[in-house]
Amino acid sequence: MTVPIVELRNAVKEYASGALRVTALRGIDLRIDPGEYAVVMGASGSGKSTLLNLLGCLDHLSAGDYLLGGENISRFSDDQLSDIRSRRIGFIFQSYNLIPQLNVLENIEVPLFYQGVSEKAAAERAVVLAERMGLADRLRHKPMELSGGQQQRVAIARSLVCDPILMLADEPTGNLDSRTGHEILELIDELHAEGKTIVMVTHDDAIAHRAQRVVRFLDGEIVSNDWNGAEKP
Image (cartoon, rainbow, N blue to C red; front, side):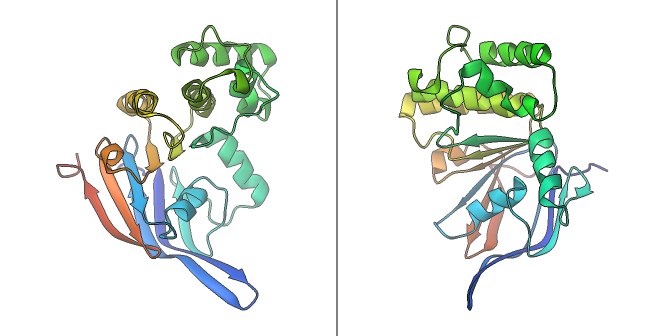
């Protein structure tokens, strides 16, 4: 039996501010198997960003369980979750989240620094990924010397450097023009074709059609969870 990469069981997330309590996720169940490409959609405040934060170990569930690669990490400490993030999850953000003082290679190497990988091994791995992303002539450039598309390519390379079991993308083409955005989506398609498990938040139906599955949120609940054009493969 296939062990899912992501399994949420009756997942609840609440936020409290004084006497005010807001329920962002209302007991959802979600399973994503290895190699799946799922898109998450929904209006602002529907719960999709909360879901991504939880899947990325940036926040804790209020109740329920989160199994990552078959391991229940729901009750992990902040330090344990930080280790999970650095080793098993790759992030691609709309705003790139690169470190402006570091060049392309150094930005790609950052996750390896926290794992104690040697400088030589980290540099070798970073060069391979930078070249794959078409950045061979930009290795020593700082983020501000790159176009938006090039910065997003650096971010994708950084997300891959630890060979994560789960890749999370939050509106990865939101700051790009349509042609550059299409190039980035093609890169993500390639990663999926190679077997990467990808969860992407987007508001764009055209982007959603590229994925295998579309999970739609409304008021903290999953209202549809459909396979694009076919039954589950």
